[in-house]
Length: 574
Image (cartoon, rainbow, N blue to C red; front, side, top):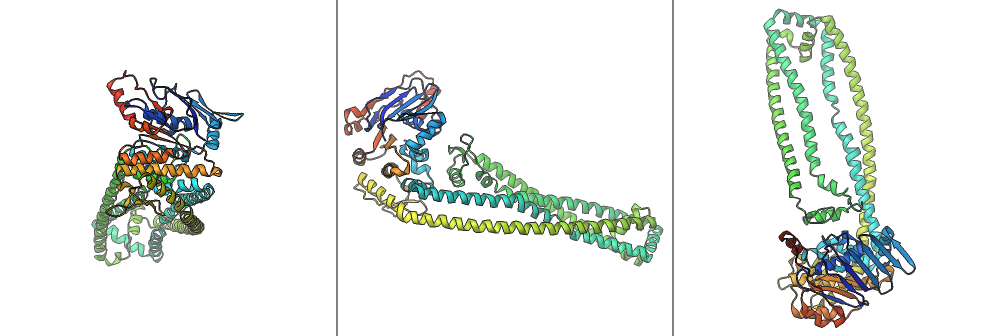
C-alpha cells in the first residue's frame, strides 16, 4: 500500500506552499527546496495526515490545514480542521472510526511512525527508542503474536509489581507502623509502679513516706520540683520521639516518589498509562516522562533533594534534642535518688508516688482511690493493646503470605518473559539483524560493517579502536544506521501481510546530511531499487539526478512577511 495522490493545504501556516501531487502513483518522490520552503513542514504534514497532531515533531497544524491521501489500492484518507475520514472500498469511516480504520488498513502508529525519519539526530528512531523498545519493535514487525504474548506477560508483570507495591504501601506498611507504635512495655512499666504504690498503701508504708515529706518541707518542695521537670521531660521526649519516627518514615518514602509517580503516569491526552520503562528512559534522557518532549527536571530534582535535606536536618536536630533531654532526665533522676538516699524511709519513693501524693494533697484515701482506678485502667489498656498487637501480627502474617504468593507469580512471569525474549532473540532478532547488516553493507560496501545487536538491545559497530555503541558513532554513521534500520523494518513488515502492516512507504527529512557523497549515492541506489516507496525532502538539488523528472517536486519559498521573532520561530521549525 503506497501513496498514489497527495494534497497538503496550508499546513501549520497560511502561506504554506500548497503541495498537490496527483501523479505520484506509488512511485518515489523527491521534494527539493531551500530554507523556509516548507520541507520539514511537509514531512510533518505526512505524519499529521496519518495520525494527527500528536504524531508530529512539535509542529501544530493550523485550523485551515488539510492533508489528503489517495493510496494505490483506492483507499482515501482526509484529515484537517473539519475532522478526519477514511474510505475503504464502499465503506466510509468518520472521526474515531477513521482512526480505527487507519490502524487496521495502514498499520499501528507505534510501528508506522518509525517509517518517518526526521532530520534532527536526537529524534531519529534509534535515538528515541530505548534498548528494550528496539527489540519490542522488531518483534512486533517480525512476529506480532509473539510480541503480543510477551507484552501481555509484561502487563501481567507490571500488574503484579503494582499490586505488590500497593499492598506493601497501603496494607502492610500502615499495619507495621501501627504495630511499631504499640508500646506495651511502657504501660507495663507504669503498671509495675502503680502496683508498687498499691503495695505501699496496703502495707501502710505510704503513711511513713507522707509524714517524712510533710515534716521536711524543703525536701518535699525540691522532690516535687524535680519530679515536675522529669514529667515535663518525659512528655517532651515522647513528642519528639514520635516526630522523629515520622520524619524517618518520610525520608525513607520521599526517595521513592518519582518511581511511584512513574508507575502511575497517565497521558492527559489519550488517558493511557505510560509504561514505567518508557518513563524511566525518558527521565534519563532529560525528557518529560509523560509526553517525551525535552524538559528540564532539575527543578523537580532540586525540590525533592531540598525536602530530603530538610528532613535529614530536622532528624539531626530531633536526635540532638532527644539526647539533651535524656541527659537532663538522667541528671534529675540522679539528684532525686540522692535525696531519697538521704532519708532511708524514702527508698521506696517513685515518681508516681510523688506526684500522686501531690495531686491529692497528701490525702491517703484519695491516693488509694486514684491508684485503684489507674490499676484497672492500665490493666484494661494493656489487655486491649495485646489484643490489638495479636490482631496486627496476624494480619501482617496474612499479608506477607499474600505478598509471597505474588512474588512467586512475579518470578514465574519474569522467567517466562526472559525465556520468550531469549528464544525470540535467537530466532527472530538475529534474523532481522542479519538483514539489517546486509542492507547497511549494501549502502556502505567499503565499510563492510557487521551490525551487532546484543540481547539487551544495545547496538554495537566495530571500529579501529574496538567496538563502539550507538552514542559513540559519527553523525554520518548514525544517519546511515537509522536509514538502514527503517528500510529493514519496512521490508520485514510489508513482507508479512498477517502482521496487520500495509504501508510500503518511508518518509525522510534531509536524510543524507553529513553522509559522504559515495555513501549517499550507494544508499539512494539501494533505496530506489527496492519496492518500497520513498518520499524525501532535501535542500540538495543534486539528488534529483537519481530520480525521474516526474518524481521531483520543487517547493516554493514562503513569502517573507514576518517579524524577527516569527522568523526565529520558523528557522527553528525548518
